[in-house]
Length: 172
Ligand code: GNR
Ligand code: NI
Image: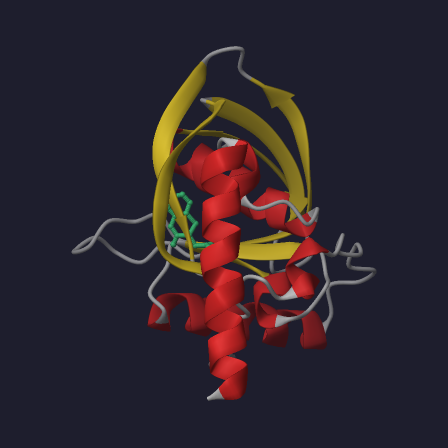
């Protein structure tokens, strides 16, 4: 496994719509394992492939709490098949938008169809933090960030801050 670099706002690749994975082969499994290592090192509870610059529709996550057994999940070509009418708010963060947190409302439960690390078709019902994290990661596959779900004023402020940081880093 290899830890990879996570791309940060305003990197334009974060706005790409990722492509479906054609076949779950050894290369895809290698990528999934690299994503898991990168996520655990960060540390984070989820990671989409585009966050390491790979525009493929796959994500990894582990919402087990500290002290619990690790519970890694590899999700390939996910499709949300239903959403609960009830919403739930959670304070979200993103490894591509470091040190910024804001409440986001999303469906509290979702039904999800996807391929797992072995390429087997799975269908799960997710709620709570798992449902929140899955929706956050699936947004990444579509070039959507959690700041797209907050007010324009707050979003503009965050974008400006990260644009300024990028300019500063460039000039040294
Ligand atoms: O580590 C992460 N924590 C988190 C907290 C609340 C809602 C979503 C997340 S996902 C985030 C890692 C990340 O950026 N995944 O794309
Ligand atoms: Ni994120």
